[in-house]
Length: 274
Image 1 (cartoon, rainbow, N blue to C red):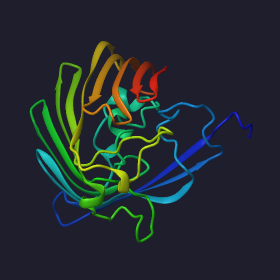
Image 2: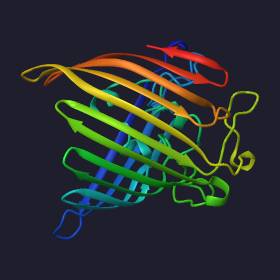
Image 3: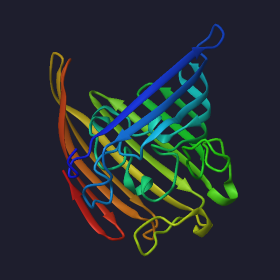
Image 4: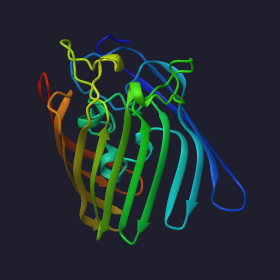
């Protein structure tokens, strides 16, 4: 294939086995990625949030899920993409924010695709409100070796990472506010890359975000929604410390399409994408 073209294929295999007579289950999911080329443009975020190195059988989910009428509790291996930034319009764009906001994804080596880590996750819903929280090892992994696997727990070296989000849904609108806290700081080096865990600092930093999606027109199964997002990181020494996106999407029973514009402020400068 032409070296100026990159084709990425992602295959996800899932398994859910009910446990007992209730709603509990054992869950598993693996990811398999194959691509034709490495990066073909010199962008900082990456041209697609499914872009990853060629890999077979990366573990995305493996654990126990307990479900009750108003919430869920999960213990095991998981990544942030299972539970956060998965709303309808946000999930539509295979954009360059790595699936989640770069103020978080580019600032910490967390369990963000294609990496996972040991996780304690829960969510609770009451009326139109939902609160979700996830506690992770401070770094994510996707290998099957002794020092590179998602079962590692190393709070002294990797730190501890926590994500919390409050959601509200009302009259065709979905609104979100959240924060991610990491107990170690990973500044970037002279080449613009995140430093290793050995070079990280024992300092608490935080990334926060707000975003909303609102239906502005609806007729039968046809729907047009608008979306606005904003996020910052409290440390300007981290790779990305400001992010914003504005967009919209059309959806019907068989089709989805949308357009969004993004702005991200990195240490190296500002990046705009459409």
